[in-house]
Image (tube, rainbow, N blue to C red; front, side, top):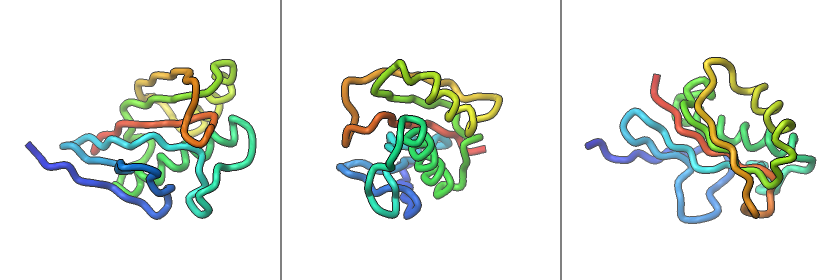
Amino acid sequence: MAEKTIVTSDAAPKAIGPYSLGVWAGELLFVSGQTPTDPATGAIVDGDVAAQAHQAIKNVRAVLQAAGLDLADVVKSTLFIKDMNEFSRINQVYASYFTPPYPARSCVEVARLPKDVLVELEVVARRP
């Protein structure tokens, strides 16, 4: 069995706990949930749920790029959102980054997210 390889990126926010931004396991890269944190300042981006969704996806993309991948390599994503009433707005943002064939996806409403953000995204990607 292949060992785990850790992925880091200066273009993504630093981990706020005891976890890795990304972990290779064989041909799969598991990217930890990314919140709408500005990697340069460590602050949550200003704006509504759409602005936060854009930043969360950009942060995921930064981790993927550090591993030599991009959003087209994502095979599964999970969206955690604060308010399911915002699903259509988040979906519009999501669709502006992901193109067919789309990854499999789950979306769940949660009571609370770290730093009280409105959206968090985690993905699994595969080496092409």
